[in-house]
Amino acid sequence: MCTPNKIWIYIGKYSKSCERYKAIHAASNIREQDYQNTETEVEIQHVKPTSAQDIVEAFFQALGGGSRAEIAEPPEIDDDDEMEILKEKVTRPTSIRIAHSCTQSAIVRYKGKLPYNA
View 1: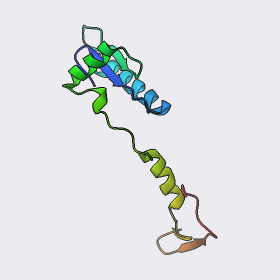
View 2: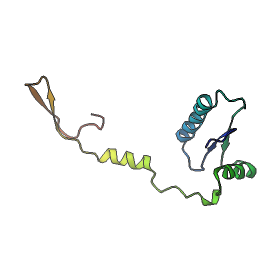
View 3: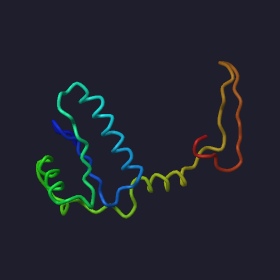
View 4: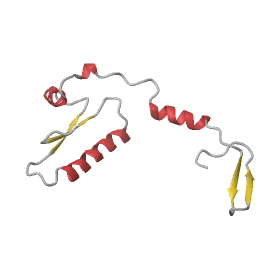
């Protein structure tokens, strides 16, 4: 969340390291691109599970209300895990038509399931 003098990053207790990295990287990019011509120094403020209560309260005040107690628990299987499961279940065709020219084509046949990225 961006305010005139701070970029807030809320880091949930169940966040993954890659999610934290992407949030920090995005905040740095926002500061460099959107605040480069401002005269005030823009701070990136992390709100972590171990942050002091006054930082947490300031975050939710800037957000317009709410509290940590109102944040939903994560689902048992998150969408990243669901995508991995889906990738395993995807069945690709076992033959592909490859066009060599406008008038000729070849059919390439594979035994079994094609790799997901094929």
